[in-house]
Image 1 (cartoon, one colour):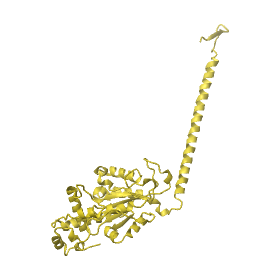
Image 2 (tube, one colour):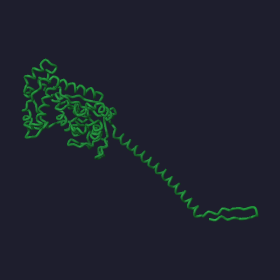
Image 3 (cartoon, one colour):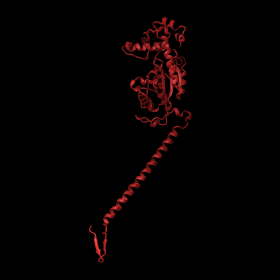
Image 4 (cartoon, one colour):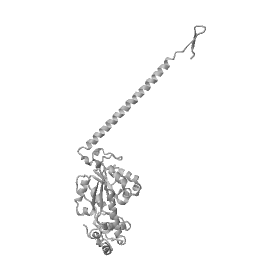
Length: 342
C-alpha cells in the first residue's frame, strides 16, 4: 500500500503510515483466541486423565484390600491374584492362588502323586512341562514358561484355571533345574513359589523301575504301546514280567550318584519355602497327603488316583540277577535297599 506524504514546509517532510485493514486485525485476534482455547482444553484433559487414573488406582487398591480381607498376612508372599491374558477371572478375581512345583526324579512316584493332587477340586498340576527341550534351552525360555504356567495361561487336561487355589507342575532334576538353579531359586522366592520335594528312599527300586520303563519304550509290551503308568492290574502284571539285569560294576557308583544329586538339589533350594516327602512314606501312611494339603493351604479332601503300582512285593521278584546284586550290596551303606520297605 502506498504511503501518504505530506509537505508542510519547504524543508520539512512528514511521512504518515497507512492504516491497517480491520479484517487483518480481526483475524489475528481470532487466531490468538483459538490458540488459547486449545491450550486450556489440553490442560483440562490432562487433569481429567490424572483424576481418572487416580480413581482407578484407588478402586484397584480398595478391591485388592477387599480381596485380602481375613487372610493371614504372614501368607501374603505366597499368594497371587493372577491376571491371565487368555481368559477372564472376573468371577474368581478375589480367589488367591498358591504356586508350587513338584521337584523329583523320574520313576520316583511323581506321576502317581500328581494324580492324587489333581483329584483335589482346587488344584491344577500341569504335568512334566520341561520334558520338552525347547522350553529349557536357556534361562529366558525357562522363566517365560514359568510365567505362562503361574499366570494361568497354560492349558492341559488338568487345568482348573478359573478358580484354582493352587497351580503348579512337575519338574525333574535333569530338566534344566540343576543347571540354572540360582536363577530359578531367585524366581521362586520372588514369586512365592512353594517347592514339594518328592524322592524315593530306596534308590535300588527306582533303578529297577527306570530300567524297566526304558526297556518298554522299545519293547512296547502293552499291545504295541508304551505306557509309563497304568490303570489296571492286568497292565501292571504285564509290564512287571520284564526283569532287568543290574550292572554290578557300576551299581554302587550309580546309587551314590543318585543320592548325591538329591542332596545337591536340597542344598540348592533350601532357601525356598519347601516340603520334603518320600514315596515310601506316602505308601505306608496316607495321612502324609494331609500334610501336603496343609502346606499348600488347601481345604482338606480325600485324594484318589486310578494309577496302579507296577513293581509290587520283594525286589527279588523283579531283578534277573538278584543273587549277584544281593552279594554286591551286602555290607555296604545300601544294604537296606535289599529289604522290603513297604
